[in-house]
Amino acid sequence: ITNGFDPQDFADPLLPAERSAKLVITHTGALYRKRSPEQFFAACERLLAQGQIAPHELELRFVGGIAPELYRTFECSEALRQTIQVIPQVSHREALGYQMQSDVLFILQPGTSVSVPGKIFEYIGMRKRILALTPAGATADVVQENNLGPVVDPEDLAGIEAALRQLVREYRNGGIQAPSVNGAFKKYDGAELTRQLHHEFLLSLDHGGRR
Image (cartoon, rainbow, N blue to C red):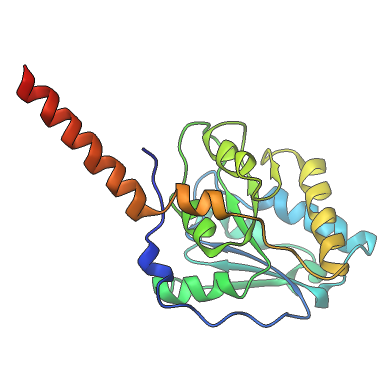
């Protein structure tokens, strides 16, 4: 039984976002230790330098705390600095609002192939395209098996650049389309997962009673 999202977070619908003039990519949650956006920024700088996208067409949002040791990764070119918006820690409801206003939700999960961050299930609940920078393993499996968006190893600069280039093409050709997450939405609904857990407890109790 996996982790999941709380359906109550989406019971009171947030206002749908109007189509922005920018391609908005958002990361919510803390950046620390190995969760460095350095390669992601390097790929973005390549796209800007190649003219694939202009600074006024791109917005990279980071909502949440940033560890002091990662501040240096935000020291980048003037063109890239124009695209970055850093928003200090906000309430959970406000974080959901920033997700709703985005075209793509960004997850950075390096250095592990077994753990899955809880926010990926929240992203599924938001029904948005996901860009996952993570090695092969549990997190990559969730995204790939449910066709939620591109998955690239966090150290694969060329792969990150290619994934971003594809997202830019989609953005230019009518906007980023949301993935079909009906199966994933049901699979990771916290209420349904709780029912499964309850059922397993009943089976265990029944088995113990028969012994």
